Length: 294
Image 1 (cartoon, rainbow, N blue to C red):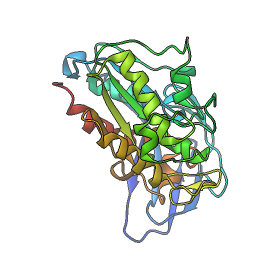
Image 2 (image 1 turned 45 degrees about the horizontal axis):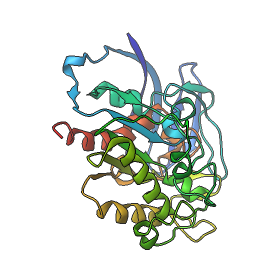
Image 3 (image 1 turned 30 degrees about the vertical axis):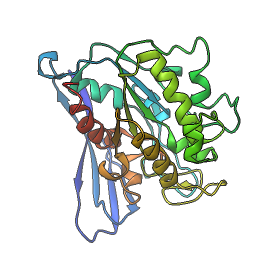
């Protein structure tokens, strides 16, 4: 039997504070405009049988940042910048890969990167050789990326492009394959590499960024190259529109995660707690359902 941490909400229209009740009997009050109470409890759920899952014909390769890396990983609640968490302690993340694996049955799954994801990596680079750029990693020998024909690849990085102040460039950088030193150029370099590994019939499932309030970088602020999260989202959508095999996951708008409820669904204003994962995975499930027969 698997144990889940379940959260129960009361959502009155005009609440001004949140009461956090823990299994130890402690309570804390935290100012909020949305959530009145959060109660921790334990419940057990039978694992989903393979015969009950949605069968996907293609293998999947999960490319993602630290929020993906945190699947089955110990995560600590902590304050960051203007974000102050009402929670304390450490929990084990039940993240995207695990939750998607409970819904879908893939022929095979892959999670490249240190511990299953690329914590702190952006898609683009601060230079053509930036070792923290996924587009640069894509060209490195021995990066562990699988060669799997006709696979599905996820791409979820732009919150780190925003945080690392990656220059946006223009769509001509994508068209002319100018390299990873701009965001547009990095998208092209990564896509070209993925096609080499999985063929022209590859499927790309990409996402915008979730809301954030971490290290002074918020959902609406501008970074040092005068870009917001929305600017990177638009650039990625523009690149996707030039191709017929890209599928968009709007986790920013459709997950239910808002700037106001970040204290309840993240560990630090950015990285999800397990309640946050159950919300953020829903738009991914919706899009992957459409690929079952492809």
